[in-house]
Length: 495
Image (cartoon, rainbow, N blue to C red):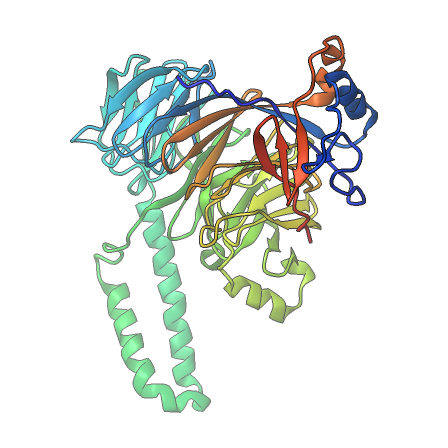
């Protein structure tokens, strides 16, 4: 285990009117004033009314690349990662608990984070699902096809996984509880869509104004009719899960596929409760998030934030392209927004601690925030490396702090979108996971950082009892340097 020798990094909010090197304990790097004592600094922090955080690198470890997903977090704070070579589990203090090589028969899926629960580790694979005990010994394995999404574990230990065309549930000891194939329902929906399309072609052929298209439309209609009459209709329909499973507070499990519908299944039996079929506006990226009232929050492939009731009714769509709800837009604007898919989503939407603000990140490198009624709060571009805007994830701390991880590292923001600090890693990709009071940051090349982020105002009183001098603080050329650690000064790019 590598212990960081870096001093604590103090990153304080500075009002826009404050110039670098004036007030708040920050001094220009080309001056040599007397350093503030810790007592003086803490009194300054206590007097302010702005969010102030302390960032400390507790430990740093390297688990090997490529890392292309967040960490799995166990009840005891342990962390699980999958790279090209192995599954690696670290203890909460950063020491290595186990390393399990990738097997020939079942390569682990490096795009899906493992799940740690009280009975061990569950990891998705190219041919199925594998459960390992705390020493790395295989407990059970099911060949259910490639597990395309991250498995989840319910409060009773039940493991849910989506693979191929089916959703599966297993007991903690590996007994298969149920397996529900969704192919039949998907083929039925595909038949309905093709039938509606064929009827539209028939109407065009009956329209005198489109007589000039007859030579093109008739072969298309003939082909559609033959396809619909084929007893093996739908046999070539490719089904792959895009999102879920997500476990709702209502005892349901939600999932969706590359061909669109959102499915709601009973967690105990796997029976289909309802589905939401809206092919042009299908959900994407990971799954859904749940509001305190049980609403489902997801992002579609054409850049709509979608709010869905527990009964499967769409409450409203918010268009990232327009920065407003579709039902508040003109028909022309709404049509254009539905065609726009270049923003997309980079993961699950997240809620503020009070459940009143929805945050999500897009492939355009921006973080967006709206209230529960779909009113825009802010849109903020997060600093990123050129050409790597499309990979970013978001977590919200218990105090409302926003943590965005991308190619530039980790950016922390206030609930209002003000940048608090940025920890730069300079790697292709980075992923952040909340683990108790820590933020675990892992990068593409295999570096893992445990960052301790706490509110300084909660610690200031205890710090006043010491006489330890504060670290040297300087601001120059857009960088804050504290105790030998550099961090970019906050960029004001909110719109």
